[in-house]
Length: 444
Image (cartoon, helix red, strand yellow):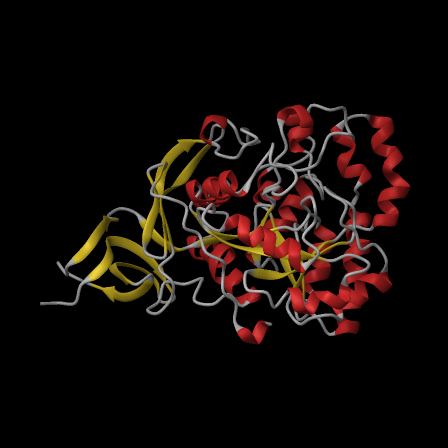
């Protein structure tokens, strides 16, 4: 009798390192044990995937789940539930909570909170401050820590490392790639009056202008070279930054978001008002086109959602007192599949941006590809399904999405983590069993 499996995914179009092929995948003890025609090999469970595409588990490398301190708009339960409904199998969560994740105690508290409550796998960033650089090397070696995050410009929360000396001190403490919110704090403070006088979110990209982003990114790359430390520039928004970072790929990797690839000013502010307000801002179509060029020519390494929910009541405050950020973890994959359907990028490029590249850049163990021995995490999608994104579908506590009413082609049909289906046809299954992500020792 042939060897048995815990799960067989049968007949799907699997995206493997060799390309796309119709094949079966056998899972045993949470790992991929076989790829090929498994016939009627005995299995405890079978997931029929004929007509569907089986992707390596998608990883969202930038989410804000607001716990502890702001659970009224999100928590680790609702945020990870939203993730699996969107086909996401793992997340990197950001440190600007209350209290911020800047100490071993705060990091361990988050890990304890996630245990038994997270629906997907997870890791947490340690937040850099002007004072905690000496402790960061130890923090980033904590199991379940994905690295260090620097806020060079102020955003949500009170984490801020604004000056070059402090940034350099952080970069010199530790070894792993450092994620950075790159806006120049001095220029933000100088120009805040633009936003206050306007009282309208259309002014957001004028206040937080291209020079604010480019100045910080230029400083960051120079400091990274001085420290000999790799950096990951989050949510890049401008043509000028794409050109600059394209010339500095040896030291800096690049993230963009689906929001900046999909929306454009001024239309997004006309339609959505402060719901379109995020940091750095949605800019005009020239910059959106440059981001797409960066995706096409390989400058962009990762697409992360920057999931950053706020309540409708908070968003209704008069600009600029309205908070910046929008939910996105649940819509990341549907939006990218829709862009693929429209011919803006290939399915293989989608997989690299949300699975392969995050695993390579951050040193994730056994993630990012469908291959024997790798973890059995899968995002199973229907490339032909046409669905309308609605607020009612959103599991995030905030209960809204800027893409409400948008019809997309391509939809997550099942999410499988460690060989266990946790979502099927928009239904959450079982109990939360997410685990801390593991990182290669060489990256620590």
